[in-house]
Image (cartoon, rainbow, N blue to C red; front, side, top):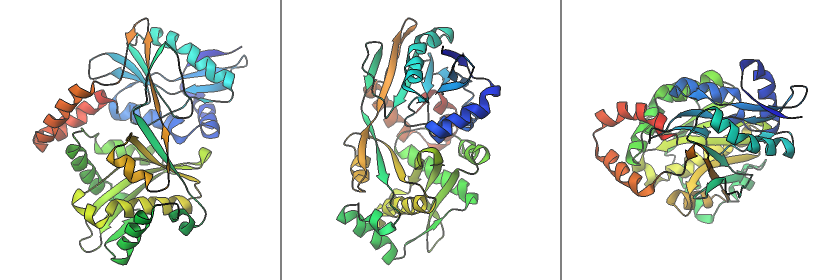
Amino acid sequence: MLKCIQYSDRLRDEWDHLALTYGTIFHTTAIRQILLESFKYQCGYHAVVDGENRIEALLPMITGRNLSGKRVGVSLPFVNYLDICASSEEATDFVMQSLPAIQRNLSLSGIELRFKDRQIDSPAWRSCRNNVTFVLPLLADEEATLAQTSGSCRNHVRKTYKNDWFVASFDRSRLADFYKVYVRRMKQLGSPAPSLDFFAAFFRHLPANSFLLTVLNKVTEQVVGGMLLLTSPGNSTLYYPYGANLVEYNHRYLNNFMYWEAARFGIRQGMKFLDLGRSPAESGTYQFKQQWGAKPVPLQYLYSQGETGGSGPPDRDRLRFFIGLWKKTPDFITEPVGRRLIRYVMP
């Protein structure tokens, strides 16, 4: 007999055990703590338990106000995808069956789910398939891994080493320097950025799984790019959820160098895959990631259409106007405003 219960701290150890056995690092309670601390969201996490109160499935979800002012649940913002973590198909199905009641009990206007491995076709959900992720196999041999890439990609990688333009660092003390690059790049893309403490929280709550890769100009020692990397031992995957670079170094193939250093790091850590992150289908980043030999994996974002209302993907035309406005607004306005606004964007 299965039932769905709200998360409580007494579930933490068993929750994390199931997360790391059947799920990813993003299913763990550490990610919950990071999101609640950084953005003042409310916890909407639920677990499915059997008749003996053993956890059979996990539903990580936070609740908060979106840009429209509506109270919604998202699984999970700031995470590209998060399939339901369960020990059986029966438990997975029970999570989906429980969602309408969860939406009513939490008084949510809507719920958003982000899936990679599971595809849902139901009139109860609106589906959006505009994004993909790329997963690159990491082979034990570096040269074999690099051989998966296109010829031009390999040439660009090798050129960066031949010219000795960059140095890779894993020094966490460079986080503030990376953050400056990140904020600058997000502004160029028309997006607000979270606070520095959001990134620092990963090192507080996931110290054994969080790594900062920064790329330095070898001459000036300036940080010109970087990635926050997360190891997920349960599925042997290295994730790249956040990163940025200075575009003035594009002609020196900075991104090629940075991605390859991430792949090399993943191999050293014993990971089998490198997740290159979310990209809109057929975008510039889509083309760049495809040249690495990684295959595009469609993501399905689901938006509930329950009794308390509906939800759906953002209005792209409306967003286009605000993105353009954000790019033109002075930094002294966008930086502090962005740190407050980002919690409602729920990217």
